[in-house]
Image (cartoon, rainbow, N blue to C red; front, top):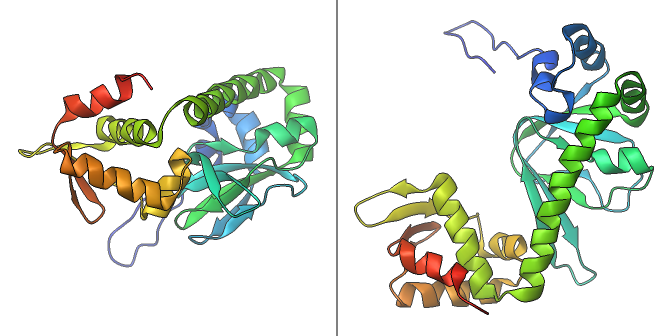
Length: 241
C-alpha cells in the first residue's frame, strides 16, 4: 500500500503486480497477468483467523498480498508442528490443486492479512495454457519438500537443545541486530509458539532457554534475547548428538 498525505486515500497495488512477484507466476506476460488478476479474489483475514483447515476439500490456492500465514500440522492431542510461515509474495496450497486431494495442513493468519484466492479451475486452465507455470510450481513444491525433509531429520535425529540453538542461530543471522552486548533477536510471541516451530513442548523450551542463559550464551529479557556468545551457539548446532 502507498500512503499519501492528509485527505488523499490509500492506493492499492494492482493485483497483477502482486501476482508478478510470485515465483510460480514470474515470466507471464502483462496480458496473462491481467487475465489471472481478474479471476483472483481478494480475501481479508484477521489475526488468528483460519484460512483453511487440514483435511478440508481444496477449492484453490492463495497468494499472500500482505500479512503472514502460519502453515502447521496438528496432532490428536493438540500439539502443533509449524511447517512454514509465509509472507507477501508467497503462494500457498499449490499441491492439493494439482493432486485433487484435501488440504494436507492448516493455515492461519498470524496478523491481519490480505490473500488473493485463485480457484482450482482457473489455475488448471492457466497451467494448460502455460505449461511453464506447472514447471515452476514443481520447483516451488520441490523446495518445500526439501524443507520438510529437513524438519523430519531434525525431529528424528536431534535434541530439543540442538533444535532451539539452530532456531536462535537462524534468527540471529536473518533478523539479528548487533549491539555492544551481542546480537539482539526477538522471540516468537510465546514459548508455546516457539515450541510449535521446533517440534517440542513449552516446558522444554523454557528449560533449555534458562540453561543457555545460565551458561552465559544468552541473556533473556521478556521476548527479547541477546546472544552474548555467538560462537558457543554455533558450536551447539555443530555438536554431535
